[in-house]
Length: 365
Image (cartoon, rainbow, N blue to C red; front, side, top):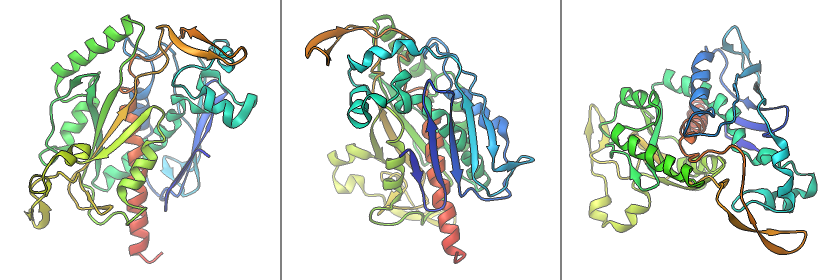
């Protein structure tokens, strides 16, 4: 089931890539919250296809709010969004029932649902399903900002090109907002130019590249989350792995922490502007599944787009013989870039849920 189930807020996603449309329903959003739909649409525009670095599929991605919003204010009822599909080419996909695409969900989908499964454009497994999820997350981002929390992400790396390192302790909301306005969401525009070269080179070869995204949440209060299986890392990782093509998630220093000594990785406590904080942030804002009040730092690995024009080996399931497949059509040479706003949206849903749940517990509800 495509359900992101929280303790206060839950989101279900429905539709297929080449169906009439796609949508999502959010339950548990607080009532009485003003919503600026133009901000949601701006987030959608960052995720939308188009341009030399993305698929040529053209979708307006105009979000229609069906319920849960009246006169621009949340009502407390389930908030439903709907996005029509327009630019589809379904005829390109029927062959994959017999000859599955490498590293796609074609074969697993057939195993799970049989011939009834909709493979057009990837069906319900498609990254297209992140559009309504982003719309809901856009509302959550606005509500978080109203509570003093700023969430933003950047392209940490594309192929072998890495963005400038960022000290989360010195990072400001203004810097995160500046990254949002760039074609490539990076802090170092020179690194962004090299990333662009890598993507275009792969595209020219009929190939693709992957990337790593890094997300920060600034202003997040301490004390959110629960051990052992309801910690902030558990909740965020489960949600982020719901984004198609995600292959890894880490927090703070992540896997690099395993190469350090404890004396180098431990974060010393100190006084920070009238509160207890840490001098460094190797832990990425979470210890024991609970936020510490330091900036949250999360990285997410996105695989190369599996749809490539280069010839690939696969199997003709009707004959049992190996064959060669070259995928035609419109595909992103690097889907990691369009996943940046999706990562922000998904993280916002989880973080708002954590804050709403803590508020309910504090109020004895």
